[in-house]
Length: 299
Image (cartoon, rainbow, N blue to C red; front, side, top):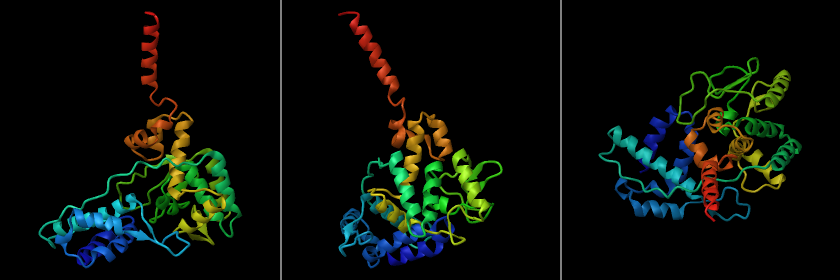
């Protein structure tokens, strides 16, 4: 299995938009799977991996803790992809089926407006953390995914997307970037955010989120410090996307328009966020109201 994962990392990972994600998964998989044979991949070993998978990341007491089922599912998904690749390329005769944990319910955590204000203020007050505050503002206004947001600049580039300040349009995908299954369609820049972006650019910023003139590659630690300083639990950079979509729906935005603006499928909007819309289940309620009125006539 170490050979399977190595082949996948060396041959396939460099062709994707975010090879580091594959690298993180393989780093987690190798200690358990590396010495095993392909024939050892079965339901029992997959379940044993899920039980054994622990991490010390975020632990301050030196103890390890179990990772979430969603993380295990992503890692085992990479294992399946590596096996399928090696089978397709002729390295192995067949690819066994990897048993994945059940899908977890979508995260419901989103920020209230007072919480968002506290988070931004905590970032601004943080030591050399103004770039974190910019990341939070852009995330709340656009719902752009972390990786895509950190690659955005103020001019066309080959690294990622860019903000066209003259025409008020954000392009989430850069020139020549490989298309992925994560949608990144262009969208208009919200008016209030456009003012911030123009000011930052006028002061010399080349990237939407930069530190000392260089593009920021990772925001994880800075964001975690800001969330802790604001007293917020279970908040990650992805919470900003969830918050932006939730606020839009709570404000009465049409679900199709929300799906287009946030570059998210209408199925995901309805499944994960639809209950936040004011008209959620409205037709069913109206139908039952009609039944009630009809019943009252026969009392």
